Length: 336
Image: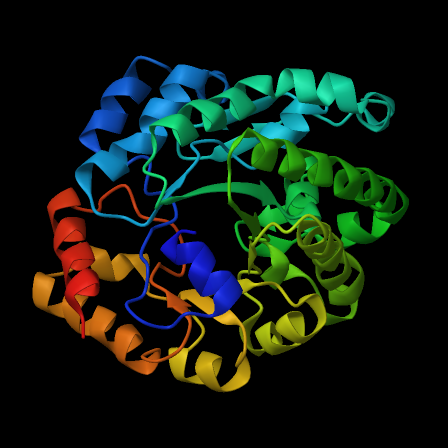
């Protein structure tokens, strides 16, 4: 059992394990070299050998307790028939959804399209130290729907008129996504992943009256599926603020990743009993060493003697200095 699964399942609370969201990616020069030669991001995610190599790059550099497979949450809509492109300074751009094609994509066709992802997990698991976790992930249904149906006006604002207009379509897509995400989770675990993280990156833009239908219940179905198959699961419903407590009460994940807008003091008081992960603002890592370590110490001190996994409240930024990250990891590992 890895330190991360021990923390999630047995609630072990000594010497917090450490890993980072987006640790395999843009801030590493060795990744940027591969990326420069592979312009199509989805194709890169579907290159099993390169995906595995990228996954292991931060493990070779640092004493991290987990690798997270190099992939993307939008690999699922891609496998269900949508074109997915990543435009510079714009982010992901998806073609219009063809509902019949989406709804009629069967399990075999889906699995075949994403076989390179499962192969990358399998390759990585064989190369990874058995004491380290291999984390796989999915986007939560609501977050995928936001991208698939183009439901944002701006970065953090829901197009409420379009959301209300598309209710029938949203409900059809939601049901299909829950089923297909369970398949994707199972396939990743069968390939060698031992932890699953569910990213609900746009939970925070949902009006409160819709949270139950589009955030809590879909996440609960995925978490229940994981528990049924003895898969440790971490949820990250970003932006929920104090509604994090209701999420934890209803969904009951093994672990909950807090974002950097949630105070760690509030989290330990209101999310008690659930393993807590993350919280620190990734922008802090762009500052000087003293400031970084002081902020890290704050989290480590608050979560001392509590089941806690050191991570961030979002992914590592491209501007992060790998040397500074090395100092942070060393500090976390040696913290008493």
